[in-house]
Length: 154
Image 1: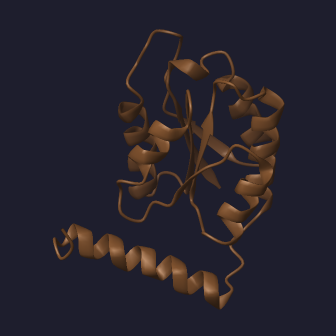
Image 2: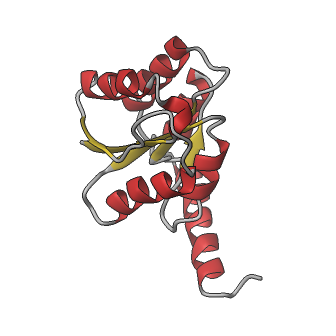
């Protein structure tokens, strides 16, 4: 699987370790930056990774910013994206198994590196269960997104 990776400057000191973890669990990483600690705007980097997914260059994405919140908000603006901000392994497992999440958002600040590495391993070890109740809910989200895009909901 190809995984688009993007982070802002807050992850400068951990990004290479996170990328190595994704590769260690068997995936090719497409690195969309950022490079270094110079402040950048996280939406610019989230967009690069999500556009790689939507164009078919990547299958999934991992996004990292200070809290993970900004990246997840930005990613979830795109139709077909189900980004889960995960701060523990339980959220990663449920995001994958129940919500069919295809993008993982992580926080770089106030989160131990070992926790983020465990979340990544858990994320890629789990898959959508396909249970009817979860399928029904994911389809409702997709229909809601389509209605919003068509202007049927204001």
